[in-house]
Structures are given as C-alpha cells and as structure tokens.
Image 1 (cartoon, helix red, strand yellow):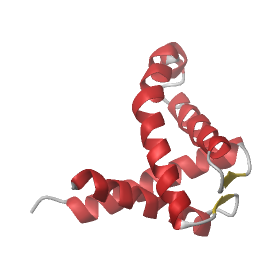
Image 2 (image 1 turned 30 degrees about the vertical axis):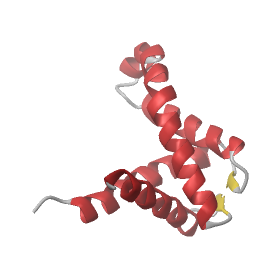
Image 3 (image 1 turned 45 degrees about the vertical axis):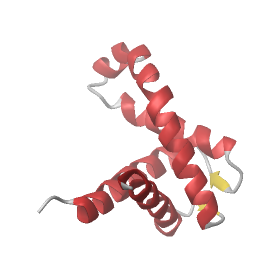
Image 4 (image 1 turned 135 degrees about the horizontal axis):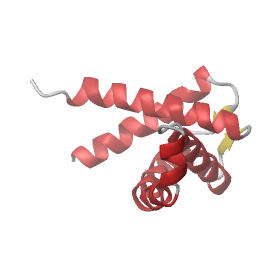
Amino acid sequence: MRLLAIWLVNALALLAIPYLMHSVAIDSFGTALLVALVLGLVNTILRPVLLVLTLPVTMLTMGLFIFVINGLLFWAVANVVDGFHVAGFWAAVGGALLYSVISWTLSTLLFQQR
C-alpha cells in the first residue's frame, strides 16, 4: 500500500512541475502516473550503473555531476513517454531538481513518523 502511495505522490510532484517551469509539460494525470513509474524504474535499474561508471568524474566535480546524470535520465524519460515534454537538457536538470525537492517534501509531510 505504501508503494502505491509513494507512486501517487511522485505523480503529483510531476504535475506540479509545469506550474513552476514552463519548459516542462505533462498532458494528463495518467501521463504523470506513467512517467512516475518509468522514472522509478529508470532510477532503480539504470541510475546505479551510471553512477558507478561516472564515479571518477563525480568525485572530480565533488558530486555535482550527479545533477547531470539526473537531468539526462529525466530527459531520456521525456523522450520515451508520449505526453511528457521537456524543452532541453538544462530544463531537464531543473525539472529533475524540482521533482526531487517536491516529491521529497510531499513524502516527508505525508509519511512522517509520529
């Protein structure tokens, strides 16, 4: 049940991004659910491999290269899923950053332990 709730929170976070950035667009709530699912799968499967492969560059940039990886994955998902549009690479980096902050904030508020 918690996994479905987190999936819904991530979809809501994706729906909030176009209101904050005009270079990201999502057509519908169903598209947001699909994008949240694909982003979750990509971040689970592909992101760890990319982090290991780019470890020297990440260490050289003191971790800032992770923003580039997150942006590339966000942009890749936008190219795969119809109805999810990102204007360019830097818009993808900003969108990935906003997505992380919004989804973390929503999950913290909803699932905090009392």
